[in-house]
Image (cartoon, rainbow, N blue to C red; front, side, top):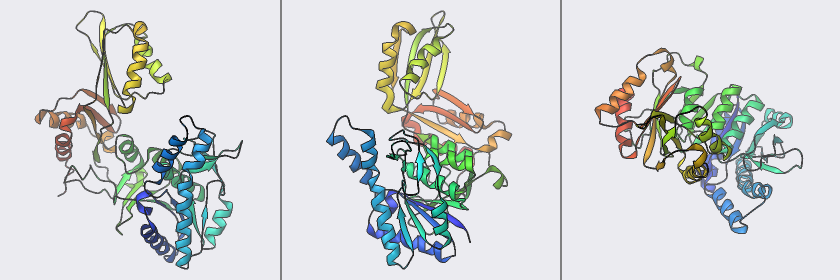
Length: 407
């Protein structure tokens, strides 16, 4: 017997027929002798509709009421799945975040989980009852108000619950059947990975892969929760996300991923003096603008430097406004931005013990005539910024260069 947490996203519970299909999946796990808790998202499109309702109701709205509104979609899904399971003869009940309770801080709209009390739920699981949990939500202690965990928070709910329950595994059901070496819509030779490490999955999630939410992977790695990414629509083995020790031999590179959510900002002829970087990035940090890739070059003008960095595309206008506001103290001569760029990354824990990974990347791109604008590296990844028009060519070339294509 194993204790399993199953999480189903919005597309998996998009209508009653899909909820009935989910119920059959849950019943199959129960029939195999396992204890099962299920975490569900709102039905596809419902959360966006609730957000739109809130914004239409008031331009400046109370975030506490926003959480009360947008969390209701998960309540509906949990109740419906419990009803369907009961109709199949399965003992089941729905749980809202406050009923468990899932205790969070008071950061409405983006709360962080502080504790989960599972004594009663654990007792019921042991008796054969299925717990159907509304994901994405919790309760803050001071005023006992409903909180939400931010978009994608149901993944975080599932991993946190699995950790609290001491579950043997947390299965994340989605519209893909696992984690691939690259985007199979672009790279026809992309392969599904049987296993991937937490660190690799975390890098993939943060660098554009949409399979798992970053916070959920961080939490799984911290608490040692074994994750499995599985398809909601096909009964196939998925991809296990596990500790590095569980993978016998590491590939040098496990995947090639990308992010279109990039924009490049360049400050030209900035005075080359101590403290200039703090004068640029300090105000951006105060405005909660996240800066990613950074490169600094000596300018053609004496005692000046050119500085380039990237931000999310949605943050470009705010970033430019902040830099223009501080133009006098920074002292740059020109401020420019560019949207038509993408970030391409190669990822693999095997990089730690293999030299030449970056050179393979640079050589493969050079062979195709693709210019690299910015480079960043870490222990297990190399990322480059290139013109968006070369994205597909770059992905396919790198996938082949590292021997990742299907045999």
